[in-house]
Amino acid sequence: QPIEPAAIRKTSEVKAPIDRTFRVFADRMGEWWHKEHSIAQGTKQVDVVVEPRAGGRWYEKGEDGSEHPWGRVVAYEPPNRLVLAWQLTREFKFDADFETTVEVLFEEQGDTTIVRFEHRDLERMGAGAAQELEAMDGGWGMLLELFKTEAERS
Image (cartoon, rainbow, N blue to C red; front, side, top):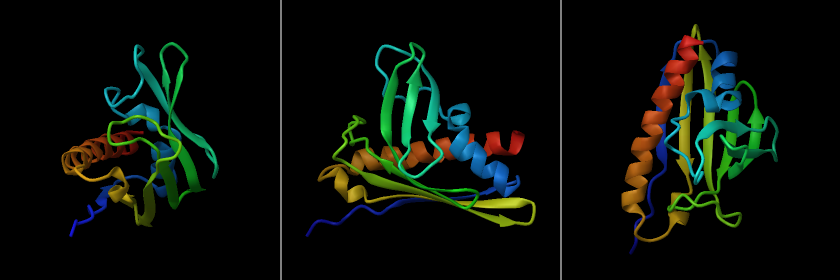
């Protein structure tokens, strides 16, 4: 019997107010996102955009003005919750009919914000995706460290 992959879960303590922490994650993603983690072909990534509303788009912008969809915004609830539909297959190709879920929760604790990240529904990546999922786990870990650094610096 096949075993479904577990969700990728990460928790960070960010030494920044909750409002700033949420805004850096959701509204300024292009400032901390690693530029090499891009699906754009033939152009350099210059920004990552999360449109600030449920139903909004989630995409990257190329240096040449092109836009490359990653998914859509499911819930945009500042400063506590962001839910994104990740519509990139395990080959990192956009597919409007494919979807996994990225949920980020922000909880204020004094002068620190606890950030709980979860990328779930990974069983939709299909059989044999274990190697890609392991790489995604490490990738999210690196990206979340970049985010934390930016949120604490801003």
